[in-house]
Length: 44
Length: 210
Image 1: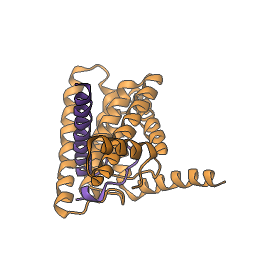
Image 2: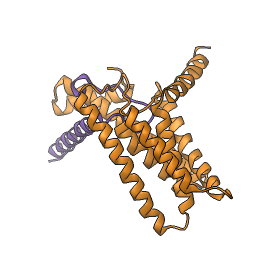
Image 3: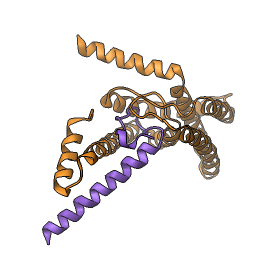
Image 4: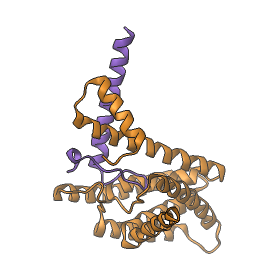
């Protein structure tokens, strides 16, 4: 039960992070004054 | 991958635990870095604004500049820590300046607002989006869309400000802070803004080199 919950939490975290990466790569830049390198697969 | 150590380690951990592809590791490292650095920026800015007693003004400046920056881009520092320092200092300073400007006699915040809105609109129209080598805007369609979105965001922000100032006695400060944020945003789109960030980076790189 605990293992399944951990797995579900980690998978949700990954999905949220991938969503965030896609959203931020679609904008001109993130709002701070430093821009991490956008992965090649997300460059449009 | 040119990400900070903790981003790569956390991304590797997530990939190993969830069985994602190696390609996802880079995307996750990028997302972790964006999330943590921006949270740090927000926390430092809010904390300094609160310490200096200009929290509301700081939030107005930060919110205005951040929304426009999302669509318009602008100059960047090449270090995440210098970025945090610049972000945490510039917005509370704008908040203080806005408060002082609103108290000046013979000074109209509405004239400042009109001037800054005009400068901002012209700069956005001419220059936006200003991308960086780390996040290039390749497609022309996306470029046009970001320009339109940045001008739309400016119009919405001005409307929002004009609504907010109807319900607050400190409207002068808010208008001044909003105008300063517009001017800052316009400045970092120009070559002078880029020059300022280059100079700051060079000063600190030289110090580290010594």
